[in-house]
Every structure is written in C-alpha cells, then in structure tokens.
Image (cartoon, rainbow, N blue to C red; front, top):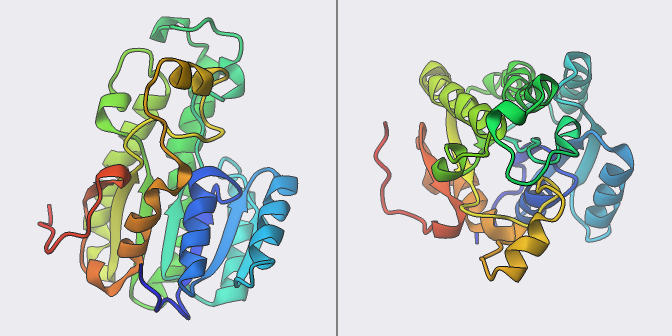
Length: 260
C-alpha cells in the first residue's frame, strides 16, 4: 500500500504469530525495520528466520510483558539496535487461552472464573500494555515524534456476557490509550486503538472455537485483516491522527479523521 517506509523503525509485541506477525510482515514489505518480541523464544526465532529469509530487515528479542525486567531489557536492546522508534504496536495479549481458564466448561460466566485467571489476563492485556508504554515510549520521545498502537477487540465483544476477564482487561487498556493520547500529544506521539473486527484465526482463541465458528457458518477473519490499516497508520497520511479506534475489516483510508 505504502512503499516508502525505509528508515522507519517499528517494535511489535506479540510479533511471533497471528496479527502481530502479519503486521510485522506488512510493514517490512514496505521497507520498515522491525523488531518483534514475544514470550515463546522458539516460535519467535522461527518467525524471525522466516521473515529474514525474505530479505527483510527484521530482528527479535524475547520479552514477557508481565515481567518488568524483561521489558526493560528489550527496550535497552531496541535502543542499541535502532536508537529511537517511530512506531510501537502493543499486540501481546491473552484471552480464552489463559492457563487459568483451561478446563472451564463452554459458556462459563463471570463468577465461574478463577481469580488467578483475572490476574493473568489483566496482567498481560492491561498492566503489560502499561509496562510496554513506560519503557518504549521514551524511545519515541527522543526524536519528538512517534505512533503508539494498542490492539484491542470490538466493543460488542468487550461487553458481551462470557467475556470476563478478557473484555474488562481490554476496556481498561482502551481507556488508558485515550488518556495517553492526551498526555503524549504535546510530545508529538499519537496513540490509537486498532482491532480486527470479528473472530480472527489466532492462537488467542480458546480450544475448539475455530472449529465451532467454521461448523456454524460464522465468519472467520485472517490475521492479515489489519494490513491495510497498519500501513495507513504508519504513513504520512495519518499524521496527527490520535485518540481514535479503527476496525481492520471495515477500514478504508479516510479523507479526514476528526480528533476526539
């Protein structure tokens, strides 16, 4: 879509698979330099090798957003590798695949959820977002500009029954993103929220969910659903756009976006 991202430096959390990996490849194909991070080192290295084999300027760093020391170490490596960052995409997240949710019967409600599951999901989706921001935004502040993106979910999913603790964790992170869009504006950093817009075939889905969606004839999105959107948000056309939420499957580059 945009082929002029040479010299553009990007950090993507949760970049070893799913939406994160698809967005990484999209930006790399347009000339950007990208560092991908994730918890699972084996899959992370495999993703890096696959992208590097295509001639892309990619590197990786193991990082667990729930471990502050791990995030600090990755930020130091990113600074050593890039000096500064133009974009940070916060894609790391968990939902129905949270370890403490394993074994719950389909159709579980909020009061069936173990407290530990809430800690795990909020720890990744909300506190992990905050920790990432705290350590990586300074690499955008160094140059007086940058673009911060948080990967969320649709509002209907966020507030639908059966979505505790995933929905509340995303709602909290979205609220924080809007606050950050105001607090970082005078530093030249924009903050926006992005989501695919429906069930997406990624590892975040609980066991059996993909088969259920297919058998019931419901739509299943591919991880590439964000490609057009991420390209536009990295482009000069998105300059100054902040405090917005965009849906990947419905996205078409707008003539003008009203700031909130």
